[in-house]
Amino acid sequence: MTNPILAETWRKYRGWALRARGIRQQLDRGHRWVLGLTVAGAVLATLAARWGVWTVTKDLPHAVPTAQGLSALSAVAMATAAYLARAVLEPERERHWVRARSLAESAKSEAYRFAVQATPYDGADAGTKLLDRLQELIASGEDIPAREVTDDEVAKGLPIYPLPVEDYIATRIDDQVGGYYRPSAEKNERKATLCAVLVQVLSGVAAVLAAIGAIYSGTGIEAWVATLGAVTSAIGAYALGQRYQRLAASYRVTADRLALRLAAYRLATQAATDPALARALIIDSEAILAAENQAWMTDRLRPAAPASGGG
Image 1 (tube, rainbow, N blue to C red):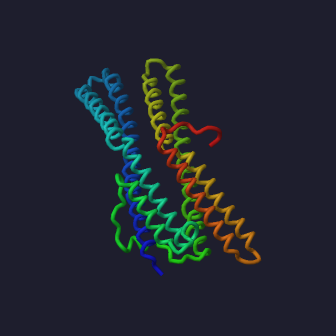
Image 2: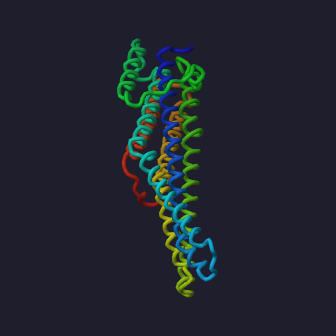
């Protein structure tokens, strides 16, 4: 059975989630382009500087124009990276992404609370309360409205009404634990490891080149040591901005908290089901998800900083 107020709340969830996804994709592309252009600019600048030295003794006719061309390409790459950092990666765009995602998660949580008839949607005025709450969300997101979605999009994952507790566990808790938080934690851990390995490898190569340059002075190798240092710094800044380690840790903790809360419910209801315990499970699970969303939003709205401890 489909409840019209539940369906409208789900529509807003899908619309805000779609808007957040679109902004996130733009930001991710922008970060990758800035990283790539920064690396390319550093390499081209070093090539331009060393080109004349390499070719001066060979009397090549196109040595100077080639060096000038490489220098120009380096300048273009650096300028484009700076432009993208200002235009695409502006803080306001990130705030819009964070708020759209937060609104989507809030609407989704209210929809599930209503579907399972949990507090405060356990009375005769449940529909009115959900409508009031939805109006509050829409008012708070006037500057970042939900995108329009089709009825087919709305139907995806729309909870039935009323939603049995076992269906809530399957579509909400199990889906979040096994379908989102744990896979996302693994994905962020892999990316954090990749960036760390790249930084370590490039730092090692730079150290070797520095040693060779010290032994064979005048070879110009020291210029590439500085370039590798710039590339290493760019990769480190990219990984720090993406918050891979902190996200992985946060997602792991949230998945574990949900799984343990569900295990406690299963243990307490081995003999027989208990509506009070089921309501407590739902309230606690939504509180865990809300806490993770709030922590994520707070972290994204402050400048990235190195993770403390072992992460």
